[in-house]
Image (tube, rainbow, N blue to C red; front, side, top):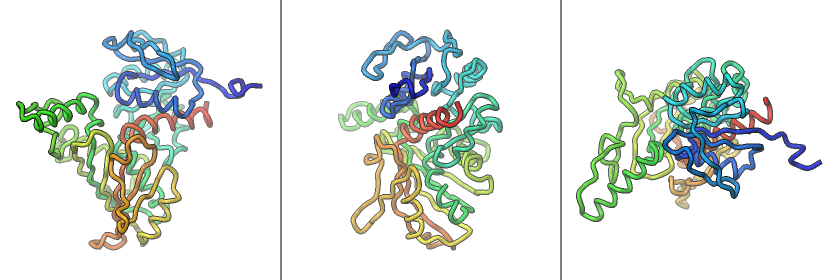
Amino acid sequence: MSLQEETKLFNVAVVGATGNVGREILSILEERKFPIKELFLLASSRTAGSTVSFCGREVVVRELSEFDFSRVQIGLFSPGAEVSCVYAPKAAAAGCVVIDNTSFFRMDPEVPLVVPEVNPGAIAQYVNKGIIANPNCSTIQMVVALKPLHDAAVIRRVVVSTYQAVSGAGKEAMDELFEQTRAIYATTLRVPPKKFSREIAFNVIPQIDLFLDNGYTKEEMKMINETKKILDPAIRLTATTVRVPVFNGHSEALTIETERPLSPAQAREILSRAPGIEVVDDPSKMLFITPREAAGKDATFVSRIRADESVENGLQLWVVSDNLRKGAALNAVQIAELLVRDHL
């Protein structure tokens, strides 16, 4: 019997296939040799009819509104919340299990919110609505780093400041950073901001998403609420999310307080053994990770593990990850891998 005959294959739809995350999903499906029988690429009428390369062949992009989801078993969605809210339930009703990258279903109590290294058992809850939610990119890398420490010493409180790349806001945001930077260097007319509230080139913006009545932004509240749902509702967390002029790769400065004391050496050892984490931490040798070094890699990197001198049982960490990979596409594909291995 051939390997193909031994391995069950699945029909897969990638929704939002022409966007940043959609293309990254396709790259990771190919890299990880996901068991695909037939692949369908779906997008809006604007890009329908174009082609995308996959496994050495060109696949035609189809119009989402005309697709019959009974043809597929798995749907990897990243088309925007307003699209997912309409089409994800339709796909699920047709028998397709949806793994959704948008924010729309994340806080639905009947929809599991999953990071495979943190709460893989939650995937089984997909039977409720046929939908699994992928967390926010900044939440994913943070909870991957928090989980092993929480298991070891119980985290009571987290203070996080993020330094988030423009790719998290899409291709137009990346283009805006490029054009503004070029204009400054060329001493031509400035390029006014469109995707952001201020110029992003040579600047940092302490606002990601809309401001809410409590003074936090939606991005900050996503990190707070999603962490409680994924990891532990008892954790107290506060966040400040900042957009920085980096094309790809989110960075986070974490301060955590634990119930039991945990030395930096103990934390370093625990994190070194944890799934999905790579510890790069030796200041004496200038060993720490920046977004450029994390780009294109699957791991969540942890550096600068040290005691917080201002509080008892406190630790500080520097956490970096490729937000298009682990922060979106890779996490979704990892969920799909567990889904086909253990549930379908």
